[in-house]
Length: 396
Image: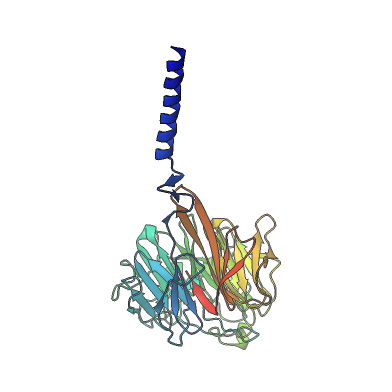
């Protein structure tokens, strides 16, 4: 009786073991689910010759989706299933890069050079897709009536012919608007709180809107800050403005000796970096949508080319010749972050991507587009590895 009971117990144990092995999520038919990718990412990047590539792992080029044409991408964006490339015009592919057509021919372009001669017309923040709003925004240079902002939007993911001029809340909200284009927004960023912030680098003016409101001015540009005629609504001159140097010496649409800011953010803190950086203005931050600005320290005297906060975890600034910097959010200071990066690196653009595995694991990656190649980090930006050599301008 005892022996039969023992046999019965062993049979149960073997049955449980068999069931467990069959239903285990660790392996199926000998495949380890820890390494099975359920949802891969798609990384798009452009080189200095204008070619655009796709990679599904950030280590190898899967295919070339746009042949070199001599015009480097100023920005890349994806809206739903459409791929959009900003070159001299905006191009769109609706078939995963098999071919591209014109999407919008009046994309804003305000080229200039930093004090050291570095070109400044590459800016990922000139286009932003907002899936929650079902809208794609891009800066424009349309010389047409009622173009008060220099921003166009599409409700159909950039489809050709589906572009409209975005509007202000009221003309009083932007005050003195002069000759059209009245405002030339050159950089935008969408914060987690649902505020889309826009900056006019030609006139040093800060704007914002939400899904349910049209554009308003955060703070205008007083004549005391520029030395010449003020722009904007005088009622908005009470904020603490971004410093804007020596506008009298050069036209406001060239880099010359003036500041030329580009927008980014970390969580709901708005950040402006001086791409020109001739006067070492570096970076400023605002916690009230651009009305009051405070200086940040630690950045080098190099031109500041890009700013980004992948996954809202860390904020980085890429420079022209001084590599990468990371923000210490406790002290609002920037620190060099070049472990694994080449010396004197030019960092033009950055992006975060996620890889989802079948076992539920999520691996986060950060990628840099540089003059040496694509760099990858798997530890939040602490260390970097060169994965694809080349001279790259934009990444998405």
